[in-house]
Image (cartoon, rainbow, N blue to C red):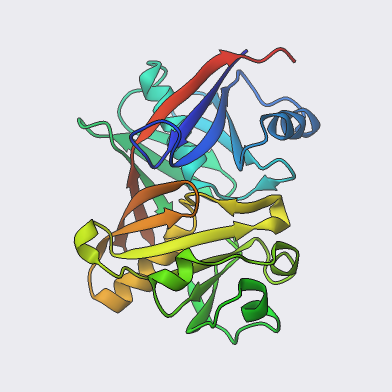
Length: 269
């Protein structure tokens, strides 16, 4: 069967966040899906199959890290929509049925893909014991996110603090349901982005995720409240980086980015 690796939230190869994508006729058993994701060994591998016409969604979609299945993934959804459109398997709006509900994706004339995701709630919480030591930085504020995400959003003092983080991943794995998102306002917005972030998910087998679309469903309302604007641009990453454009629409958040296929091959399994 065909397998693709797509770099998401970037317009050039070898940057952004890579995801595996397999289009299937139906979902095999979970054990097989997990084995494939472990073999691909990227932060997420997406599996999708078409649904009967006339329903609320067009494709069923699931995401697996090398260690477990997750409820929501932005970059692998972007990668899947990119594969569907570039191969002609879908046109126009594509609706995905996933654990977190129905997600939409549309492609613009310039090739950007905009996804419609649920906006995460944000609950201010005290910094858990050991958080600042695990991150190696002082937290300005800490917020918990909605159930389908399960991250802690940790605001740091500035962009330099986010970029210089060298976390203790084993310690971070004990502090949240899924991961920790460190974020700060951009030092120089004239560079084309409003805020920066890095995402650490050792609990689900990913020490650092280069560009985390699902985290931006929490970062969008967080920074929109600070800046007083609904349309923002986020820059995420350490060694690999990418750009996510966000648009807050109440209980939905639109996430926009590019994607590029870097591997198109056959899976012999």
